[in-house]
Image 1 (cartoon, rainbow, N blue to C red):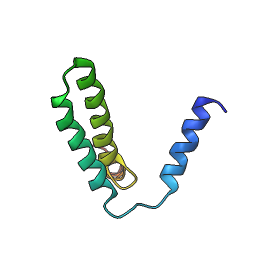
Image 2: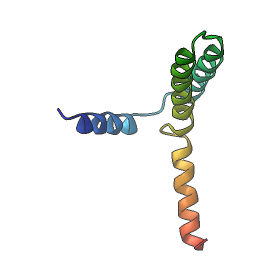
Image 3: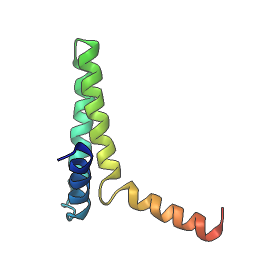
Length: 84
């Protein structure tokens, strides 16, 4: 299986699954905890890796199946409708 098709399959499965109650809050909490942990790391590489993971979790919390993606679609629809 090619990497692109594997990733596309994962994205499709994630988009089609129902939301879990509180899922975004849990993922946001994990991201914030990782961000705090990145400050405690002794090495620059450790800080960068933990910070990248924290950013990924926080981004996932913001753009998950019920997050910012739905909001951006509504904004695009409004801009198109009113031609702004």
